[in-house]
Image 1 (tube, rainbow, N blue to C red):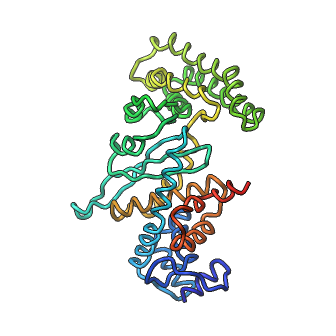
Image 2: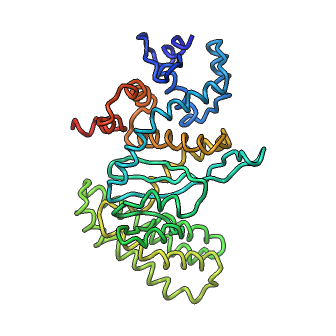
Image 3: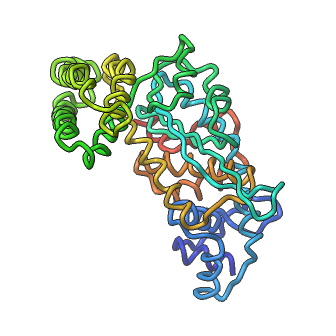
Length: 356
């Protein structure tokens, strides 16, 4: 029955391999189950209902959970390779997002954990790393040996990490703009002044990307000429206007945030590869945010880290336009017998990179 289900799902007639020891589940079925949960946002119990309806097969929910855990054990060495590849870069973006986890110490209650997300825009790879809290320990530990640009929002933990002389913090214009957008209801006139300049910045950036054709040096040169003066325009306006607003009003908070973040915003212009904002990493987090509404929480801290492994690979596939089901099925077939020296070849998009 499992073979029939897999072959119907993916249109295969060939008998597939069994990646998990002592399990009859083949790679294509495992890939289907995990992609359905983490990309299509279908909890295991809904998938079981669909299996029963379409194939007359009703697996236990614990069986699907065991399959997921077995796949993540297989994928963990590749996950560590992905982590190494991203940390070897000299430009990454970082953000964090909450995720609820069942608390084993308090029956029926949940713990507020966090998925810390690191994205390499150049290699188009993303890494989710689960931590029990939002403090600096997790990112500080992961970034201990990192050297380069770290693009982030104004969360104070990043400022503490940025004390390290090996790390240069770059800001996020979207977060700065969002503060002024939030102030529209209370001070429309002033908020619109700032928002109009932000609009000009992004129109210029769009034209610069088209003109520079992925040439980072050209992009930096054009930004210095056309965008940097606009950013300075907002700063100069705030310096004159900030004394005419209440510091704790929405517009006052927007001005203070921009002014405090300005040194990091200036660092965006140090390298043409650096994006104006963290939108790419927020796009990577979005599937997890949608999934939270469907399966509500992770069953344990270990399950949350397993979810981080899968979100990392699926996010990287999305960044590179790769079919995640095909990638995962192919990878699960190869992993059990794959040489550790060649694990890098299994990363999403890597084989394409080394052959072009």
